[in-house]
Image (cartoon, rainbow, N blue to C red; front, side, top):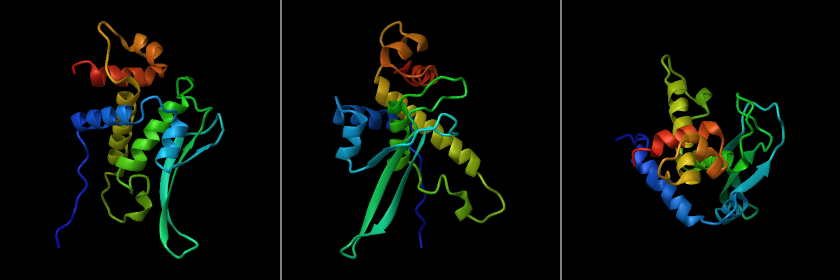
Length: 173
């Protein structure tokens, strides 16, 4: 039986996907985006948390006996990166949105695989990079003439780390 394998999206595809999201959700808050996509959005505070958020989907049985998918994004509005910089809810949301809809479902569940050689750490790092690039492309769109990562951070209201990612991603486009 042929096996389907996950093929990660390339940067050009990722940028197009982000452009579609920018257009589809133009002018909407993250709460409105979550509501439109039927995603439960929960804020869980904790300044010492190791993560800014997470996304998950699980199948539940409804009262009518039919299965339904429950999808959620959990944000930590007090999350700070290792440099002590507070990361905005928008950054965390779009990062987790990417994981919810476009990352392989097993990326954060290595315990479900039994094998001697694993690339789980590498795959996880790649998916984190893709989620960051998607977030950068959604929140920035395109660079202005003469813009730097520093001015980009100020103009778009994003962290300096995301501004650097956006600058590297979008400067030659």
